[in-house]
Length: 244
Image 1 (cartoon, rainbow, N blue to C red):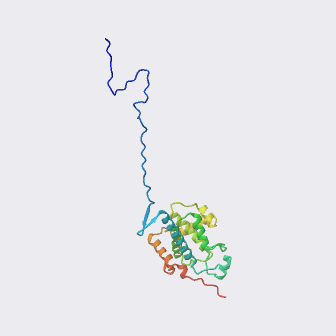
Image 2 (cartoon, helix red, strand yellow):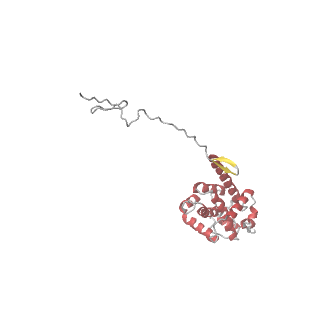
């Protein structure tokens, strides 16, 4: 009598030539995809003087402070009393003020642009920081103190500022334009730019680093407009006009 084998229940038996309807290695159903929603973080805030500002507000505040400081720097340079813009050539200046000594800072002709427009142009196209503008003013003050006979006027204030601004930007800023590009923005030749820069450094005995105390003192002077307490020789001196 032939023995018949009956497989136990719940056991799947595959015949040799039959294919399973579904592999036992694959899940019977598609996996459930879980969607996790992460909350969007708020914009970062920065505390300044116990007040909270967003990044956009901080950038806008920095721009406003920058414009205000540039305006104060322009007012500072415009405050010097020796306005001789009525002279069109340096020969006329020398004729009326024979005691005045010509320096490398003096221009033969009156610049066709005001000092306020000149500063704004240099600041806009040079990419230098507003801190370099303040440092340039400090270097101008120190340079004039080193030269007792130096007097700021309409023929030399442009060249003196661009040379001090060139030196200050190299010290203060990480990235700088070349002297060639800086001279082009300033409207002078490259050899003049190099000579002016050297004259400032030599005149200051290469003491061109601005201290924190000097910087804060200049900021206070600009905001209070108390220029006479700087001890600038150009304000104390007066040019003797030729007697007729």
